[in-house]
Image (cartoon, rainbow over all chains, first blue to last red; front, side, top):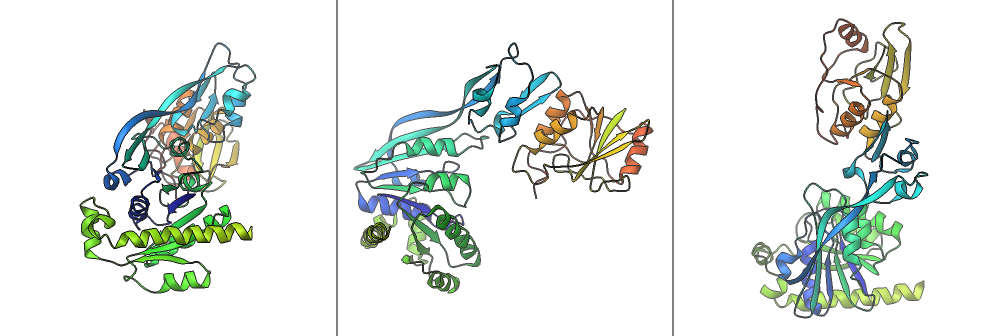
Length: 283
Length: 121
């Protein structure tokens, strides 16, 4: 069972939900795929046991073999190669490491060299297995690191994925292959606008989802109305509570400072399990 | 000698487009014969790497200089490798800029004038 925690808008509470849910369940894998600014570790405080670097292959032109035919530039979907005058320019920062240029070079004049883009950390806290990734400063390609983190998924385990915000490539890469997505939102105009974008995204990906409304007693009723109209289940509402804000600021989990929340998170998981079963029966 | 001017429209009365990679038009002008070729930029709405694409496109036109508002690092590197002189910071209409260029009023830049993604809307 793989559950991804996503949201259109940032700062709605993905990490709060992911970390509290993970630790309430105990024996799970928690993957922090928000590699541009991972923060689950601040709350889980895992013991890191292993670290390794993540690389992407970038092209290196062998000018002795290259006859400037321009095929590499033609096939590069990311405009990372230019052939001008008597040389081939490679723009490493635009390269996604897909390998098309070296594969399709008729002269076999392109070697691939590894470029480090970030790291992965693997650790644990009691029965919880923890993996996160960090993109190096100045790098722009989050998906290769996310793919590396997701290699640790075992379909037999319960896996919780803390996804990045938004609806772009890193989000898709993080949530793809999940059994269920929890969309965390807040009842504000921005929260609702971005929730709608996330709903459209996950409908397209055909992954079942439900909504958690954080700071649910703020803002207006429009989020509830929208979910009712669209037939989207509200799985959990968390109020705007000073105690929760205080524990968050101190890097503590809600279930540590207010243990009564543990049942709410376990119920959230049970609800998702039931929804998944119903979804499987239908399809 | 051919030069390239980034423009918002297809003729000499058009205003300078201040972005190189995402300029609406590249006007290729032969300064001796006054022959004008207007190239509609196919990279205006590109996701990324448009500086490289536009630089490559212009390098294939055999121009000696590019006159534009701003040029980013990737476009600069591409144009420089092609041996093209890059004059940034120009404004007004294409006609005015061409006149000023012919009178030798501009100096080529030695680096990009803006950072990556500057011209994104």
